Image 1 (spheres, rainbow, N blue to C red):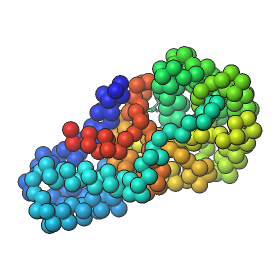
Image 2 (image 1 turned 135 degrees about the vertical axis):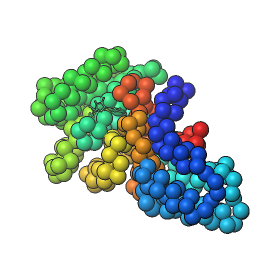
Image 3 (image 1 turned 180 degrees about the vertical axis):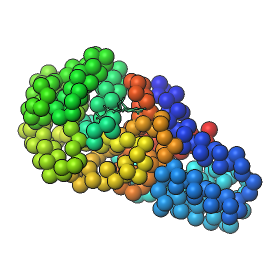
Image 4 (image 1 turned 180 degrees about the horizontal axis):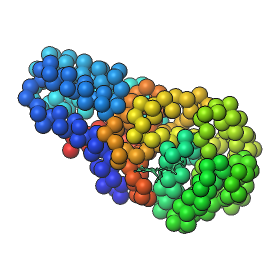
Length: 303
Ligand code: GDP
């Protein structure tokens, strides 16, 4: 797997914290439980999940006389995975592709979250898989967004539809969706401006884009991806809650996990919002993105 290297890097900061806890491990006493809860909360897995994990460990310690370091780690790993997928809907981790014709991804998120960068990375990934990829520069609001996406398109060797800054985003979507259908593209990525300050505006803009899309491709968009900055910790969670009120989010991309010890937010988002994290980003380069798998992620924390 070409992304394995990067995945190891993204886990390291959250993992380092947990490994530090276990480096001082002597026995499962009250002090250990306190330290465990503190570490989990500092890593942003959320208070609810931190307490559930530590309670579950207490139970196992009593019931099965767990005391070795490796056994304790195994219980924590198992509980993290269980709690992540508490409602047992892990299968919606998958990307929903169109049955036929272009699959449309709509990207939403506040400025600076990493939307444009994520589209650039994903476009590369699909292009490498032999897919015909089209980008729509419908973030016509943020200065430089169109040019930035244009550079990704050039580097990725994929096509782009754009209009001048401040054009109506829906007109860009109109051009793009017609081109995608007419010219048999496999994937259409739509970049949007994320002005959460004005919820009504954002909602109107998204619903207008949706109308334009569905007129050409009735079941589009197939994925509405919310991009959130992982370094903002619990704030990422609040953003996700707000965006989920204005659009039906089908997946989350959590970015910048290379720059944070708060990687536990990956688990908290799914646990609290029941929206799957589908990709994680861990750097500015094209390879710094990987599909998210909770079991791989959690197991990797202790490597
Ligand atoms: P947008 O406004 O949502 O489109 O955000 P951008 O894609 O322009 O990203 C904002 C900044 O974050 C840029 O400088 C990106 O290079 C940077 N960035 C995006 N994703 C990551 C990531 O996973 N790790 C790091 N370290 N930087 C990132």
